[in-house]
Length: 435
Image 1 (tube, helix red, strand yellow):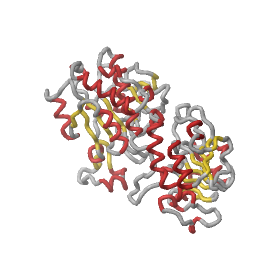
Image 2: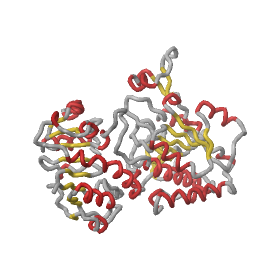
Image 3: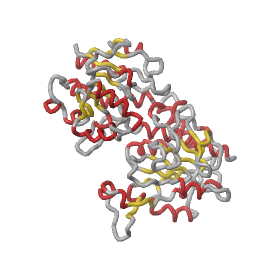
């Protein structure tokens, strides 16, 4: 009988997610006649007993399984010869901190599949945690805003919002937020902080999830090109939240004025473009964009230092950096946080992070594993995406060459290493391994 292994997650005490839920394991056992070996865990969102009840083996020794699934990186000490591993490896950008892991995988003649590279013909990811980073991130961002306003002396309904992990479920969180939205109609916002404007950088799954949470309140969307005029008018309400969603065309402009913005040209030649984004128009920024070093930064340290000098009190209070690139699009994100210490105030004068809500600067939320705060729902979504590809992954034949694998192209193209060799799509990683 073919077996698969599911490793426990131990990178963080908050990492309760799983590749497959008990119900999904039951399907694998019944439909594919698989033996499922699962390492015991005290922090997993689902109990060992739940897995055992659907036919899984609870065992420390999963390493003889044909394929080993995990969520986060597997520690180097658990990379054993000739195994097939499937997890988020965080090596595809040549991340320096994970090059030792990639070297060990190569040295041990292992095969590595990365969920992030299981994509369709339009380069859209097929295996992911959906909009759960956005959902959890926006709940947390609203909580942060409520706490910051409380620190500044404002009593609002947002002071009753809890972090995402304090709710029993996403359904409960949305219900509670909707109730607070109704209360806002009777307990309007102080005029000093109105109108409350949320700027969303990005429009994909993460952004949509975040907007879904904000829409538990009464909201009105303002187009980027109309926001400046809207803020100078008196046509706004203290009972609703305003949101502005930014696409690439709203964030950047060609450096040479004679050139018009063209999306594919921006992707291919970002060096020809510069940011035109004005952070000062927003109370809250929600960063939900994909970013690499080649792209412009949208909230720079230089802007923050000028905006938060001792004589000015800018509108911007909170940044929910869901994308979480350290000193990336949000340059003030100088550290990554966790659910037990989720926020810091970025002090632009000293270029330091002051943990908590107090200080002269924006409060920044920068948790890099937000779906962990909704572990059952996010795992269910993820597993449902992964299930259709398990059969194809199991068809990998280590007795044949890489070129002769008879598997779906989505899986074939996601194989980073095959029997200890970088595959052609990922040969570029050699230059990072040699550093």
